[in-house]
Length: 347
Image (cartoon, rainbow, N blue to C red):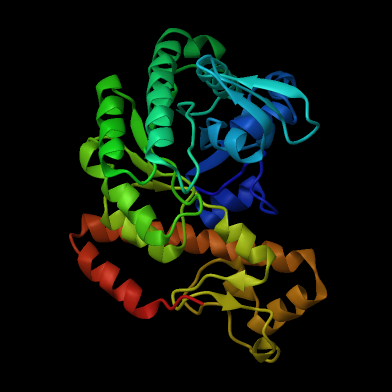
């Protein structure tokens, strides 16, 4: 899912996301959209889909991660979290009910339960207390959603609600979290608290300690991940959905993802290279432009360069998951996984 934190995937239009990237779902962020432009604007415009001219699905993060990573002077209580927001320092409050009301008002097709994301490293005592609070908040989210979300949606129908498995690096806490969420019967389940500074092996273990206790008949989502090899490995462990800022972030620094690994277009060796970023890629960047031209754009600081690389990287990520999905359907994912890793070389 391309990340459109503030109602836009950086430098890429909704038309391009539909026609060139072939994205099916975008991610928006409750915390950022709540602060700017604010619910009044989005509500007046008829909801986030209409506001940003996106006619496919939207998943909204609950805002919990941003509260704990961006906010200042936060105070965590049973009711929710009071904090100074990162834009102007004004006192702001988010709770399970407030987060879901915002997500319903935005018109998200998939909403996330409000949680606390513990830091890494995290002592076991803190992880246990945090998980207990997150579990109680998940129950409140489930109750509010069942009773109230339809009355706030800008469209007819029903919004899906996903619970988030926390528990830091502790296997038994991850299992406890997953089982508790399954008892609450969410529409889908996310593995949270990953990619927060922990080593990659800890990230993989967090998934391995969570997924086996989640139902195979519901979507399973790894939040904030990852590099192409990480995604392939997460799929091997039973994950279905991903979001990640890396495709557009790497593009802004002149790097393209390819089947052979990352390609730094700033390097002088590309100055006279007539080949595309990737020969078998169908994105507009590879269809029309050479590495030499992209090198020139990036070195010159031209906006077109980062736009073209963003389109390519997003296309690469979506195409990779499409190929993985087809390999699963064809019962050859093991071969796909092996072939991918044999070819891909990390920078």
